[in-house]
Image (tube, rainbow, N blue to C red; front, side, top):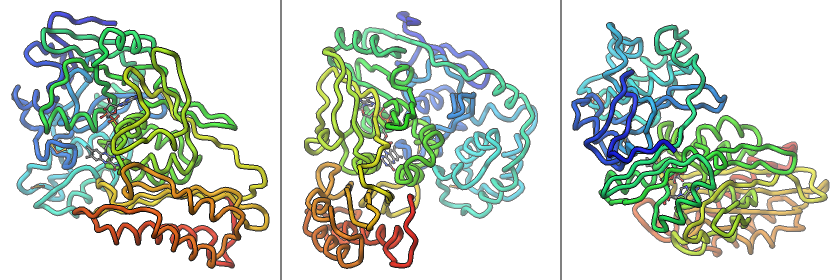
Length: 477
Ligand SMILES: Cc1cc2nc3c(=O)[nH]c(=O)nc-3n(C[C@H](O)[C@H](O)[C@H](O)COP(=O)(O)OP(=O)(O)OC[C@H]3O[C@@H](n4cnc5c(N)ncnc54)[C@H](O)[C@@H]3O)c2cc1C
Ligand code: FES
Ligand code: FES
């Protein structure tokens, strides 16, 4: 490991090496930037929701090449950025305005200007990927200009053939995340590159906290000002970055960011494609990992229902070796999981084989929130139904988030469906049973009654979309 025991760490900021020796590694990048005069990067919410703090970090994309990736600086601790290259809004006008800045001016995309640097940085990242669209800016909020001129600016620069110093930088091989460690009297931050190193660090620091993308933990740092004396970053651990596809399994490393999974697994599991699309926003997906989404054990995490419906298993490593556990057995209670002290989720295994007798698999997921993107689920649902040649149910898995203390399957209804024909009568019976299966809570997002309706109606929606109408041709979806 590159060891920095003298109280400093280095990042590349706007092309220049910056030695940080006056801020602990738990300081968020946003805090650091604003304290050091880089005030173009704005603070809005401080919790990943508004995009005002968006910066760009050079990172590896799904194609293995270097990309500019938009991220929320309010959620990233400095330690996670050791030796990485960061670009802020101050760094993009190279003697003249950057094309995305010119486009914003031309369309009148800025009024008070508070959100503008964040939009500019999201568009900047998209510009070098050849696509500046609604998805590029879905994690940025504007409260006064209105989105039409901003979207028009995005349209003006989309598909542009970027050919400048920034694009040339990307031609260089994708940066490999190096090992890094930092210790001072109050804080220790480790970024190991192998699972063995993680486990040996845990032997010495049994109270250490893992950080992966930091999109959950970052809130504790920024919003709640919680202290973490020992952080172990999982970002560079090779075993957690794997992505293996075989005929039997898709194995995804727990540390792979969602934006990579979005690209690499597209077309394999439609329900996963759909849910990742609606997961937070681009800046969050560039950081958030599957392992983090599972480990937090939140009842409203969006990917656990999908993974439950696909019967996923987890590979977990600890001092006594590795073990596999079905995700269905992993959640014990509200934010309580089977993960023991000193254990780390290594990967998620999703089976690809169908049960015998299956000729058609129907599978999809649904997320109901108050907003289309960048919102938390009121209810999330994921269904997987296997049918035989007579359109009878061979196997059923109905999984939900937001309806109980844990992400959960409706096992009673699943059992009820097996052996039944896939038709309207059976679906109506299942709907009635689903309404009685869970006792969701009422909160400011939705009442218990509303949630109960969603539990049943989403299943009917799935039925109608996937073979419910008698004349609808059944095919593998
Ligand atoms: C603005 C915003 C929008 C969001 N939108 C959504 C959304 O639409 N849907 C949704 O489900 N979630 C959402 N989230 C929550 C969050 O993004 C996800 O839960 C994300 O997947 C967490 O992953 P991470 O890598 O950032 O986890 P981190 O924050 O790094 O870690 C979270 C927790 O998991 C532990 N951990 C991480 N990796 C491992 C591992 N491999 N083994 C053991 N423990 C581990 C950490 O110690 C920590 O306790 C949102 C968050 C924000 C800030
Ligand atoms: S300040 Fe709102 S996303 Fe960071
Ligand atoms: S220009 Fe004022 S918030 Fe967007």
